Length: 87
Image (cartoon, rainbow, N blue to C red; front, side, top):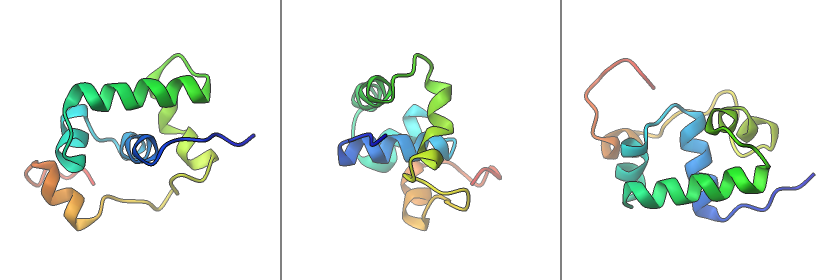
């Protein structure tokens, strides 16, 4: 089964799988939180899932992300968090 996601949907799903909050994703991608939510909802619809938590596993299954994937240095800077030990 091949799921066609837009590039932005792929980015949002990847960041969800890495544990980013809505605010983190908005900062990293340079978009508003409601836009993040729209991309998440579109991806959920395309994957056919009802719960956003299921999006944490699907990127690995569909090769959008890997088990070894981490936030890049630039993504960590844009995220705006201090060193909190997560990613």
